[in-house]
Image (cartoon, rainbow over all chains, first blue to last red; front, top):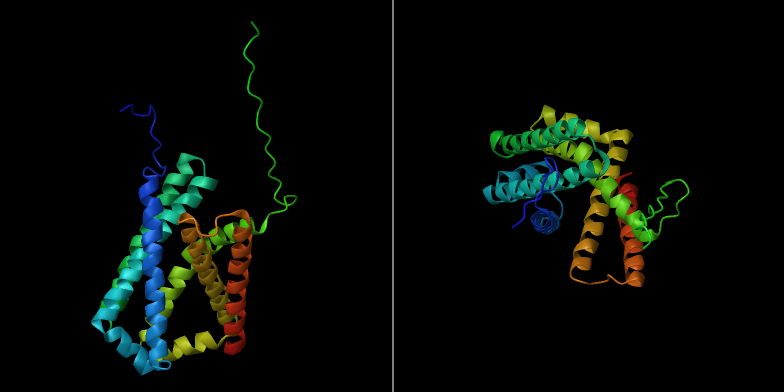
Length: 119
Length: 130
């Protein structure tokens, strides 16, 4: 196999895998959206106590975390694509992508704190 | 033998104010715009709202008071539109991947449908919320 002479440091690297991941994560989010709407409709709307009870349920917490994890990966692929289109200089794009990843990892930690930290 | 001709540069015409975008292009750029909105504002807002809405007593009351403000509601509606447009436009992409509606005419129709459906649902929710 002939390797390209120059690899792009902040490029996509694996286009097909990310194309697929973008769709798999999207389907997970669609299913969760339908699940959440379905649960709320099933109860005929939720008051504050019902809302809290829903998130006290371990299964729903795990489903919510799966949704957020899919969302964060999806957001990474999307934001990286946007940065590759509009931000050309390496000295700007690399810190920008690093900041995006840092924000997404922080959101993951925040989500765990919300789901398992306070109820 | 004649000298090899240099390839002519391809014409580049990117005056965004003068380009008339076809409907699928509008749906596409809104897909990107809504995605960026969801990253910058949607994710932190949704996490903050989830945290506040699950809080007890004072935290929940503060959340309700914040949500009662017209500007908060307007922002929430904007994010709802972004979520819906991104969702519908994404489903359209997935269908196109499996060759459903990828011909020009159905692609134009589905693009218009995506734009209209997201706006319509946002409008209905907005009217009901007020």
